Amino acid sequence: MLRSTRSLRLTAEGELLLNRGRQALELLDEAHEAIASGRSTIRGPLQLSLPSDLGRNCVLAWLDAFTQRHPKVQLRIQLSDRVSDLYRHPIDLALRYGAPPDSSLVALPIAPTNRRMLCAAPAYLQRHGEPANPAELAAHNCLCFALGDQMHDRWRFWRNGQESSIAVSGDRSADDGDAVRRWAVAGHGIAYKSELDIRPDLDAGRLVELCTDWVGELAPLNLMCADRRQLSASVQALRAFLQDCIQGSSSA
Image (cartoon, rainbow, N blue to C red; front, side, top):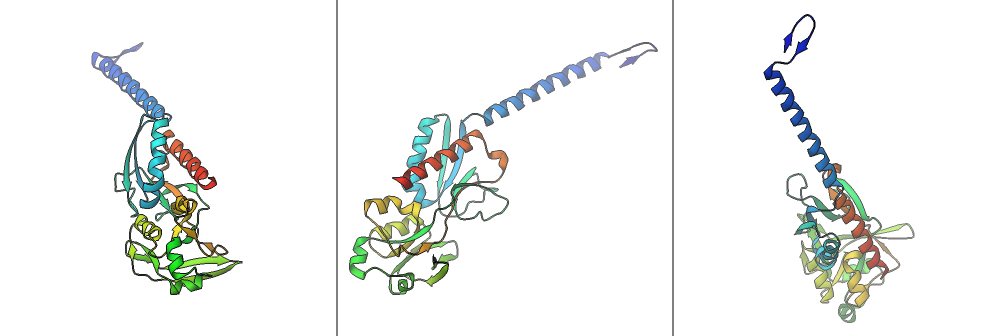
């Protein structure tokens, strides 16, 4: 910058720097506008982790309908009952039962009142009879689900404010919820499953709900992500769509 007692003017280098600065600010404004537009548009990739059973038998078909409605969304799906690390794995969203394993995760409720229920196939009940209450599960072959090193072999129920906690056992267990459901449908034993997982089987008569005067554990379904900045228009649209699908399936 050249200075005199009465005026100031930029040098050639100063003029060049000023022009470059203006260009940089314009590019920054354009970038902000593009990001804002992208967040308000239902488009782009969504990397989803889905539970094995509900994912295969319900959610995949729902997602087909979602992408028909929003053709600019590209889905990348992982089917597994193992809890994905949303900070380390290339996953945007995880649809999972229960409370988030990490309190820093953002959990969007999808089906907050969903519960587990006892169920078995008519063929199993014809051979072994139906338990009159949860305590009689000790005499039955129970199909257990394992998540990592934790075996879910203690099932809890409530009636009139009274809790019943039953240790169960059986001749098979799996770390895949779909395998447990298939065993139950095939008549191999009694399962303790999320109602969302088995609602189609109950409606079709492939499974029968047991001990209906007892209430099973809550199994709320949440859509989880690592940061609220990920709650784009696509994520919000997907959440609303899944809620509508679940409401429709439960009232069918």
